[in-house]
Image (cartoon, rainbow, N blue to C red; front, side, top):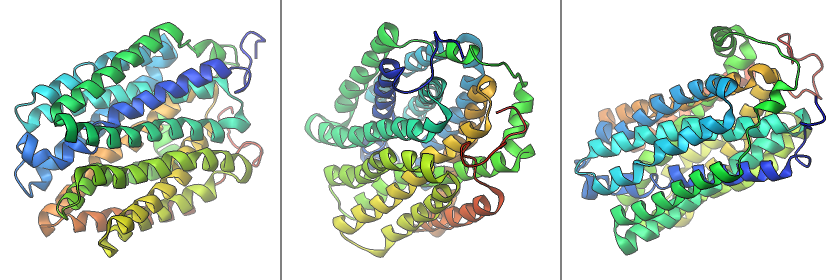
Length: 415
């Protein structure tokens, strides 16, 4: 490693903090679409009552677009640099608030969400990749914990803030003001203060794999990586459920929009806040146990939503799911980073995130079908809870510990 590009959070604290600000703004951008839009889909955007399949279309579109862009972002960033990809992601987000503001039908919301998928695929991937470029192997859990903390605290706060703005100013104007402020600020900060971290990677020993080699390694050739990818895909079923059907489920029970914002916000706040602890925890005890337990705890929280009938109970259930997410979310990514060499780590993270965020689309389609054929949203909750249980079992059986300081010689591919 060149002395001009030292590794470690402390040695790169300024850029590390800039990336945390970036990912919080990324969280703001997705958060503004998560409470108001699904709750008011019928009254504001013309979705007929109980049109469960139609309601899921915007998250299905988001998942497939974001998953694909995660894949593209990882490889592209190894060629043109992390900063340029980050900037492209923010430029793609500029039309989103305008599309929501002027939307005459739900189709415009679907288009806006596709652009959101491009934005999220390019920007969030780059904040994680850049921070991993800067830090040491034994700091990966902490690094990804801090990254996901900042992003999901931003997501939760945006859901709460936009719920109040929609109540005070109307849904369209509130989202327009919040969205444009967030995106323009992010572009300005990227141009002025973010540095490209690709030189930190290029200063290390080069081990090159083709895109296809990395994809097959991640998807099926290495059982550890395949187990991590399937777990990432299924855990997104929970987030799709929270995004689409939590607001609908609660709105049908006469919960006010601000209270919906708080209940959904508890999920995001616990998820984000607990990652300050859970990411660092995995640097000490390993990734495998937190990942498996996280899958099961998160699924249990989903099932709990159906067992009570008060704001307090629903908030507690959301908190349980959020804590499960906090255990698994940074540590699945950290496990991928453990196994990947720096030269193709951007691609590996992008491919993992491709499979993970494809879970938005597959999960949204599955829970939409479950709700459609049962005639109620409750079936979607059970679909997700059972999926998390089974996926956790697969991860437990096929996965293994990856922490480089706990397991010697973990990768035959050049770690």
